[in-house]
Length: 265
Length: 172
Image (cartoon, rainbow over the protein chains, first blue to last red):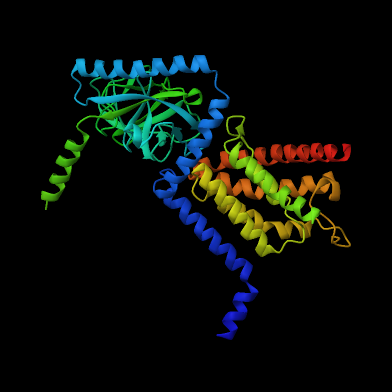
């Protein structure tokens, strides 16, 4: 016992280092790429308030007010458009300002100035001028944390063209204008410049919204499938205002899938 | 007493500035990350015990992680840098060792000593941070490049900051 104590005293620096690294790496692995939970909500609230103040100091007020009005009007019009088209997934839209964003790491994120008090919930989609941007993963009362397409830990369901196959979109880090669509059948007809659209299957966005276009590069063969390089439509480096899409009937759909999973053996 | 206040200020002010204003300060498409809080850690007194360095580094990293929602990334890197600090201090020690009054600043130890120490410690920090953040083996070469570029540019910036603040002080 005494020897053990002596050993601990002798190597206490290494021990403290291992303990701190253990805490840090557990925190990192547990939250990275998908930060959720109480600490995120508290930090969001504090950081959101601070970022909002900084943003206000820098703001050109007249232009900004005009932008806000246009954003709200766009959101209303978009909701009416989707309703008139009879889209399968109807959504409510509201404008929000991106008060903080990163685009130079592999786990990029946005903070928006709307939260649960404005009806924003995890799972809501983000759009910029009808282009898919990302989705909300955490919300406090007044702010929301969103992951953009350019976050390497998230996959997105997309479709090639209006009637093409559904595949997985993954951003692999590096260039924020490029991503790859995986699991495209070799028989699928497409060519450079074809649109990549949201499939609507994940429930974050309506189907048919622009995600990007097929890049002018040869796809990579992967067995019976192709990995297709694409160019993303949204400009993530100049993201200031977005629309938050809240799918209608979400609770009803969740209720259905929940009851289905309960009945299955 | 005044010296103590100055030491604490020198260590804490960069952390506050980083958390409040520069938490996402990155230039050249993310190739230059400015970790201003690291300047605070670099300015910890030379006589600080390794244990104190680890505890302060963990606290600094934890604060930056909580503010940037990075979940442990900065804490892990800062703690590694703190572990390396005594070894780097020994490596760069003058032949007769450090004086009790020596401080890890340009005014006390000179530009060359500060720049080399800063470069070595920032490289350790940035290699670990960018490596962890990359998360995939194929992004490691890019992470190493980012770490080396960031360390070099940040060293230049920190030297400049210390030279400028030294000049202001002597002007009074």
